[in-house]
Image (tube, rainbow, N blue to C red; front, side, top):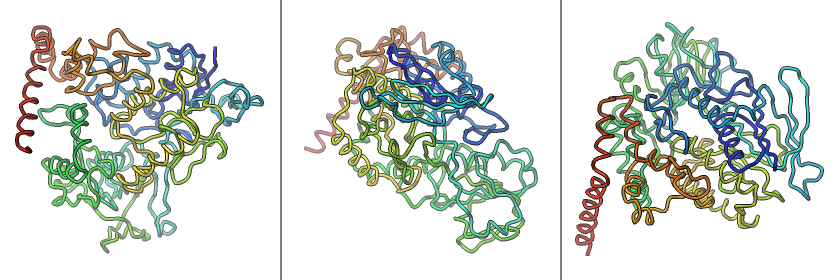
Length: 537
């Protein structure tokens, strides 16, 4: 049985261990903290080299689009779980699939190098430090899966005038909660998800909160039309099919018009210089309300700090600033690997399909979770792990090194065309197309044409309903017997925490109606297609 070292026991790490077990591999996971969970394992004091959410953090993706493909979240979980519920879900997952038994807690990987017989076997020597005893040991493994995350090494720019500023300057990683900020004047730098969350948290207790942004941001709320989670509304196969056929300019204009229905970004001073799909939007439910109440004030980029305050690019100043919080993101690195194995430059690393280094002699080292996506990371790291373990076993075969490099080059060119050249967008993937891409490699992408013939209810649900990861357990390697029922009961789990009676009524209606409602949808769509054909003849 092949042995696999897994670095990290966050979402990517526990998915990697489970994928190894599914493929009859023998995993050993090394986790430097005392529990699974990675970012979601909340602690008041976070050791260097580890990441952690803030005390008020809530998931930005809904539970049905976040869940692993063969383990839905409990139906009584809220649609947007608090970090404690996210941690609980990961613990339930680990216990259900017996993951913990394969994790060595308080063990830090300090080195991964080719084993003495690497040229012949592809094996790796993993050097591990016991954080309690200080002992360092070395073990050889047939393969390595790196899932150490990328929200633990702060991107910490030095502000002009920081040496004379008498207040505090911290990175958002150091921010746990609003205690100690009462009646303080705070400037938050950055309007991404973290910056927005911190500004909202502070706005209710601080004297004044300013949020500084270079480019502005498109703001998306968690809840869409009818009170349904916005990703449930938007992440559907038929929507991605339509988006893929629209000119980029049209797609941006349509999306911008949609988000401006919530509030006018120009009026609130938030309209960015870029188009909607060129950079991730910020998920925040309260920012426009707090701006309207005057408890958050939007400012441009910081020009420099003074002894007591901040001067901005537009010449305006804020005096008596107590704290500047830098919500400026993170950098990527692999501190336990030499650059000859994985080289990171400007947050970019060459990986075939975001997983395999193309230059290594053997496909025995995989990187899990080293990408950015508009959507939940959980299904992606799970799919990457499923693919990687099958490559380790020789069940999936990688193309030649030259072919992989050509693919990566094309990927980079496409990324430069579609996204702003920022540190955050160096490893961008489109959520559903990327999952489909990996699923094709594995052989687990649902065949909707075949399903339409043998199970139209399921086919219509997969195409027109929320594109939850359960679809990727319907067929092929890793097929799950409960996948069909889980797909068809997605809406019931969405409704349940909001209105149990409505959820029960929906279940009864589903049982009675069969696939009639989906055929009605299909009929309407066929009429629309016919009208379009006649119009453009």
